[in-house]
Image (cartoon, each protein chain N blue to C red):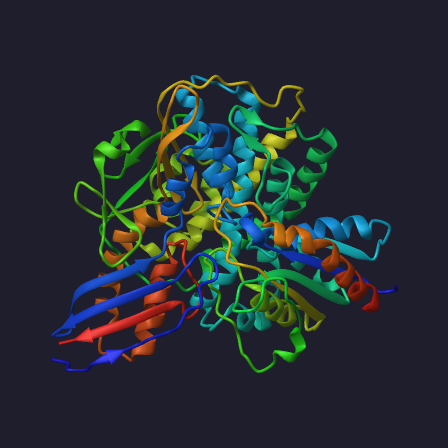
Amino acid sequence: MNKKIAVIGLGSPHGDDQLGWLLIDALEKQFSTHNDIEFFRCYGSHAQWMRSYQEFAELIFIDAICSDGLPGTLHQINLADLTGLGFYQTTSSHALNLMESLQLLESIYGKKVHATVYGIEIKASAPTTPVSQLVSDSIPLLVKIISSAILSSG
Amino acid sequence: MSDRKISINVPVLARVEGEGALELDVNNSQITKVKLNIFEPPRFFEKFLEGRHFSEVPDIVARICGICPVAYQMSAVHAFESLFSCDPGPWVRELRRLFYCGEWIESHSLHIHLLAAPDFLGYESAPAMAKDHAEEVRRGLTLQALGNDILRFLGGRSVHPVGARVGGFHHSPTKRDAHILLEKIRQTLPMAEAMLSWTASLALPASSQDFSSVALRHPDEYPMNSGSIISSAGLNLPIKDFELNFQEFHASHSTALHCLLDGKPYLVGPLARLNLNQDKLPDFLAKAVSSTGLSLPSSNMFHSVIARAIEVLYAMYEAIRILETYEPTDRPYVEVQPKAGLAFGCTEAPRGFLWHRYEVDDKGILVNARIVPPTSQNQARMEEDLRMALTDFGLDQEENKIRKHAETVVRNYDPCISCATHFLDLRIRRS
């Protein structure tokens, strides 16, 4: 692997929405000897990885998704395919969302970094609840799949 | 007399904090009703806290807001320590102040550069602004990341910090980490100074409204974690008497509770803090403020962006002061013994003071909780401001212009709702 990759877990401390962070915990251990991969955890703010944007050739985001899909379904979304959707208005007074953050960085640095989102379907999470058994059990397989993706992007 | 019937509907996707909806009733070109609907997360957490042990509360309330967890943790821990007669000591006190500095820096910096500045520079969005003002936007991101670094220094991580506890902190950072952070802040200081000059140079609308500023006041310092509640109308009371003087009621159009003082809206937040505590700024900073031309106290809500820049600069100098004399300790917390009673905590979140009250039994289990966040306190003031500001702006203007001006007005308060371009679902009924 000869280019720097950022792997960013998006989440919150609410139930299965912790999935992104849990996967980062596992992936960090898996890739502990890889100096060309940097791991981040985000909860609302993307500030930490944004400030190192210029160092990265690849961005991989991992997040829980709550839609009508079957829990456990893994989606792979190439963000370059989401063209023509325009500027995404933020839904928070506190931070920009992912698309806004990427658009902002492209404007500032004139550089577009390849970005992929791995989204895993979960059931809706209530505040203060722990991670469900379904999600806990799925982590090893998800780690395997995303690890392959990280290695193949190098 | 206008007989326009207008309906503006801007859909907002609310994954996190929520949505904002504004309804206006206009009769004979006069606004007869203003309803601003805000979704308010803390209200739901009050029930979750019942039955929990007090030691769990800092971790739970930190989840109320992903970007401002420190404020919720600080109001909570101070509440319990006050009830349990626990004094964690000067080491904890100073580091809690440092913790808050981090939150003010990251919250205010993001707001100034990415949310407010596009309004005042005539851009639709931060990315559009970034094409012409890349350096300023980079500065905002750098300052925001620095604030997160301070949170991580004390909280263990910048997301959902876990370092704070009742009695102090779980761990004592190393002197080496303190030195690294100190140098980082020193190197970034010129950016904060430039930011102050820049915000003061923005073309801000002229405006003057009559409102009461309310904030904490401490005899020795610019308020963060402690003080009494004061107002520009002469109020001065201990935080435990908040409920006796401030009336909270549920407005039918909003999940947020509205707060009034003596039956009237009031302002909390950076401008209110500065209006009431400018004498607590260090002399050199007071001079820097004076050189911007800003006259305090200010009744122009658009000056809030400058107030935030002042507070970022203050927080950076305060963080430097604390880190310069930092020494680790082997006792980062003191043990507490619970007792039954009412616990009161009130600290200055980036958006204004955040008041907590907990009823606790003799085992330290919460019987009930009440959390009054700054955004709900500002709700009535925002509606009052909108009524005045939109009337002055002109209600016969294009709806898109009315909506954009309304968003700019609401953004002055940096409320805990959707707060960038096109966040408002605006409905105008004209008769």
